[in-house]
Length: 385
Image (cartoon, rainbow, N blue to C red; front, side, top):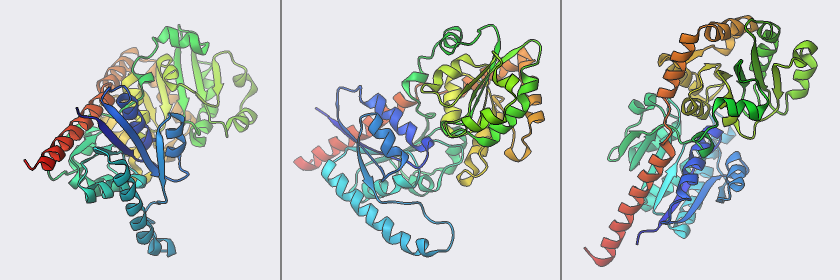
C-alpha cells in the first residue's frame, strides 16, 4: 500500500506560505498520508504559521540573494550552499515521496536538495509574474502549478506538466457564509451596500490615509453605504487620533484592527479596497468580491501590480497606483462602482469566473500522483524490474 510522505517548503511572505498551508489542510484528510514536514527559513513567518497549524517544521539558515554589491553578496553563496546540504540531510532523514515548493528564497534549498537526491518536486507559482526561485527551478520540476494564467508562459518545465490550478485557499473560504448571515456576525445592516478596506493583517498606511480622507463623503452619500475598515494593530491608535470624530462614531463605520476570519468580511462586502498580493486576489476571486486594487509598489518585481493588471483586464477589478492615490480619486472610483448595479454585477461575475475553489484539492491530488509514481518506480528498482 502506498503511503505518502510530503515536504512542503516556501516562505518570506504570506503569498508563498498560505498556499502550502492550504494544501497541507487538504492532505491531512487523506487516509494514505503518513507524514508532512514543512521546511522554511529560521525565525520567519512560515515557522510561526506552521506551528499554529500543528505542522512539523524544520528551520534553515537561509536568506534571499542580495541585489546589490556588498559583503553579504560575497558570503551568500557559501551560506546558500550550506543551507542546501542541511536540506539534503533533512530529506535523507525524512525520506519524502514528493516535495512541494511554493516560492520565495526559503524554498530554494529544499528544492535543490530534492533535485540532487532524485526526489520529484513540484513548484507552485502564486503570482501572475513568477518569482526568481520558481523561474530558476521550474525546468527540473515534475509539476509546475500556476495560481494565475499570466504565469503560464514564463515557467518552462523540461519534462514535467504545467497546469493552471489557481491558488489554494483555506477551507474557510470554500464554505462561506451567505451575505445576510455574514452581516449579522459582524453587526452590519444587510440592506446597505458595504465597502471593505483592508491592507492585510499589518494594515497599509497609504490605504488608511486615503480612506480616512474620503470617509466624510462616503458616509454622506444617498443611498447610504457602510464601511468596514481594517487598519492593522500597529495603526489603529493613529487612525483614531487623525480621524474626524463624527466619522469615527458613525453607526455605519466599523473600525477593526484585525480579522481572525477575513472570509466573513469578504462575504459581507460588495466591494473591497485592498492590496493585490496573490492570496488576497485568490481569496476575493473564490468569494466573488469585486475590488479596487492599490498594489504595494515595493513588492519584489512589482508582482502586485502584475496581479492587479491581470484582474483588471478580466473586468473583475479596478487598479489605482499608489503614486496616484488620493482621497478624492478613491471616493470617485468607489462611487462609480457602487452607484452602477450592472457594473457591480459584471465585476462580481468576472471575479467569480477567476476563482478556483478546488485549487487546494487539485494540487493535493497531483502531489499524490507524483508520490505514487515515485514509490512505484523505487519498488521496481528494488526488485530489479
